[in-house]
Length: 172
Image 1 (cartoon, one colour):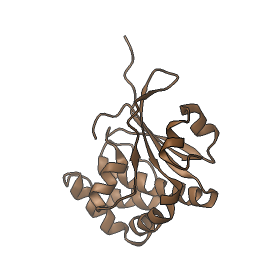
Image 2 (tube, rainbow, N blue to C red):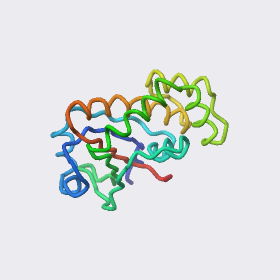
Image 3 (cartoon, rainbow, N blue to C red):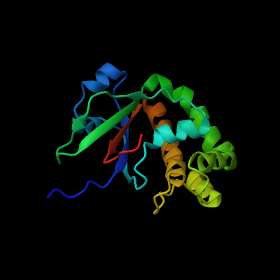
Image 4 (spheres, one colour):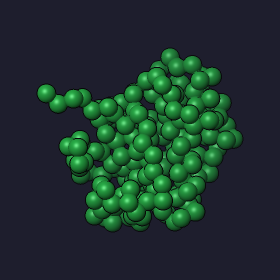
């Protein structure tokens, strides 16, 4: 019997400049050619980029790959890409969400998640980037926004895009 996959999201700065170049890269090549990446547990099982943009009525210009890939461990991987030319447009949005209006962003995330999350904890995750130990999507999306801002800054400095790799997720 195959063990269940622990859902995760990996944020990677990617050398791919456009969707065609991105789709031509192997999974391993994304990390090898990046200037930074980190894997986070995804206990809520939701696509955090979609949750974040829906909650905040934003558009990050995310390209969702139609190809379903399988990694070296046999796990299905769903990928999304923010191309390098979109980074200068999303940076101000992320800075506003995370640094300038974290209370407003936290309330929007809590509301989008059904109103059950603790707004103080969501605000703390948003401002600190500390990944939550629970499975609340609003709290995870808050920490994700902080981490995405960190990687967007790195991507802008190095003229890279951002790849999001989702493993074990089921909720779009």
